[in-house]
Length: 331
Length: 167
Image (cartoon, rainbow over all chains, first blue to last red; front, side, top):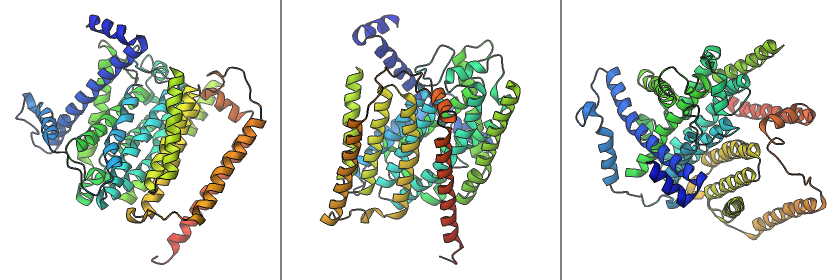
C-alpha cells in the first residue's frame, strides 16, 4: 500500500497526492454510508412496524442495496422530451458535489482532517446552502407541475430552517471562541461535551438539520401522497440514484457536524477516534430515522410556524443567554 | 498554480455574467448570475480572504440568489418567460450596464490602495468582527436599522394583502 502511495506521490507531488487519497477515501465512505443507510433505514422501519425488513440477499439482507444499485445502473436513462436538457442533467451533480466539500472538512480524529480550515463551520454552512441549487434546478427543468411544486417547497423550507440551524451552531461558536472544527472538538476535551451545556441548541440543531435535509417529518418537498416524488419525479435510473445518494450523504454530513459540535467529535475511551465519530454519527442518524417512522408529516403552514414562531426565537434567546452567561463567567 | 486558479475563476465569473445577460430564459439568467457569484467567491479565496469568499457564498448565493429563484418560481410560468428583446428595452439596459462600470472604473483609477501585503490576520473572522463592533460601530448599527425598517415594511405589505377579504 505504501509503495502505491509513493509511486502516486512521485507522479503528482505532495499535496496533490494527499488530495487524491483523501477524495478516494471520501468516495468510499460516501458509497458505503449510502448503502448502509438505505439498509439501516429499512431495517429500523421494519422494526418499528413489526416487520423484518430486507432479508433475502446476503446476511440480514445486507446485499439488498448493492443489488438495487446494480439494477438502477442497468436501467435506461430516459430523458423526457420537453425538459431543459443541460439544467436537467447538471442538477443531480450540483446537488451532490457540495456534500463532498463538507465531508472533507470534518475532523475524523485528532489528526485526520482533509482540510483544516480556520472558518470551517462557515464553509460547511456556505456549501450546505449550495445543494439547494441542485434541487431547484432539478425541479424547474423537469417541466412538471409536481416537480416544480416540490422545488418551491424545498426552497422556502430551506430558507426558513437555515436560520435556526446557524443560530444554534453560533451558541457553540461563542462557547469555544472559534469556527475551526478541530478547535471546537479540542475545546470539549475531558468530556466537557457541549450537549451538557447546550441541550436546547442541540435539539434545535437536530430539528433544523432534519428539515434542511428534507427528512420526514419535514419531507414535504417530496411528499409522495401529494407530489408523486417531488423535485425528482422525472428523474430516471442513475439521475434518481444520485439525488438519493446526495440526500444520504447530507444526512451523514449534518450528523457528523452535530457530533463535532455537541458530542465531542472523535473523542472517546479505548476505541480509535474515527470509530467513536462513526458511532456518534450513526447514533444521531438512528434518531433521525426513528423520527421519520414515528411522527407524521407536517403540513406546510405548521412547518413554517415551527421555524419562524418557535425555533428562531428560541435559538436567538439561547444565543443571548449564552453570551450573557459567558460574560458573567469571564468577569 | 494560484495564477492558473485565478485565471480559471475570472473566466468562470465572466462566463456566468455573460450567461446572466445574454440568455433568454429568466431561470438561465439566474443560474448564470449564481455561477458568476461562485467565481467571485473563488477569486476572493485565491486572493487571501476566506471570510469574504464565504460571505459571498452564504449571503449572495445562499440568500439573495435563492430569494430571486423563489420569486421567479412563484411569478412567471416557464412558458411565458421568453420576453421579446426590443430597442426601447435594450437601450436603457445598455446605458445602465455601461454607465455603472464607467463610474466604478473612474473611481478605481482615481483612488489609491494600500500596497502592504494583505494577510489573513487582517481579514480573519475575529478581526472583521472586532472592527465592526469597535471602529465601525456606527455604520454597522445604521445598516441594522435599515434592515429592521425593511423587515417592518415587508411585514406591513404582507399584512395588508392578508386582510383583504378572499383575495
